[in-house]
Image 1: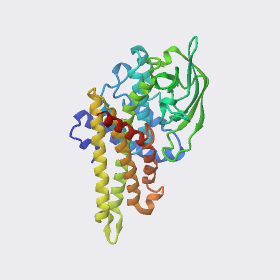
Image 2: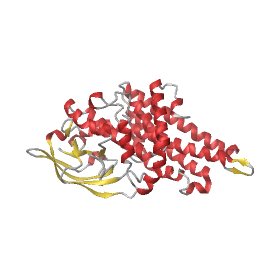
Image 3: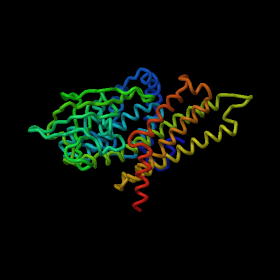
Image 4: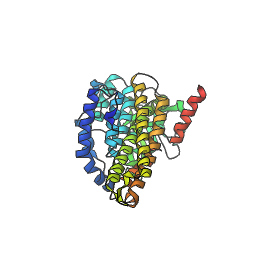
Length: 382
């Protein structure tokens, strides 16, 4: 079942998906394996998405956006992830940063910061985690101190997607006392003095998407770098993460679709005991379960997006979507390797890459244990 099988899609959304699918199959898919092997960020592919006006879909037209529903943007993420997860991740993380900027700046500040991020010329990075504060983000130690000209930032941020290739870093730092209320958010240009890559992680998957520790050694930023109100950073972080989790849910669904497509195609061609292996009930049932879980995940994240577009609180639905869709991606990609048998464990087929990429989806934008904690707290409140 493909994205455009959804009966709720508008004609415009169907047309968008068709254009994007052609681009994904003809341009993106052939380049994915080489970029992953060479650990090379897909800058030109990303810029092409900008020229196609696909990076600013849910943002205001005054800042270069398309003023489209959030659900339309998620269709783009899913379709890209079907062939190249790292490129879809670039879109998701950039949108996470742009969402925080769009919702927490004055109009003139927004219209200055957003255009490069939405055109493909700029690229955002989200800097919340630190070496000693991951899931417990409210305990971060990076400091923000007032100066005559603005702020001075000092500390180290960890697990920064796009670390070293981003143009703008959304940095969360402690400007006040302990706890969530002492955290503020700042937009920092990549070329500022004192900002550097401390270490690039050697990851299992998504190797063309750099993940790094970012060191801030007395970085001086002007007053207008402050996003929203002083002390309001943690609220900004959590609010933006609702949309970010939906982006990861859509990415996971697309990745699972890619694995299912590959497994189904292989099972139709591979013969054993004089029959196509897809005609064996045990294997066809496995594929049926994979397809069903993917369809359920898509319905879940699409419903959460509809809540967001309707102005309703999407937090619970976003956590459920991220949890279910990423667990589904891990399960489906593992099963896709199994369908391929021994060759699935080699780089001759893409399913081994899909399986490696799926694992991290259960970890970032809040681990799936944290998502269960969020869901449980919602249930406890009634």
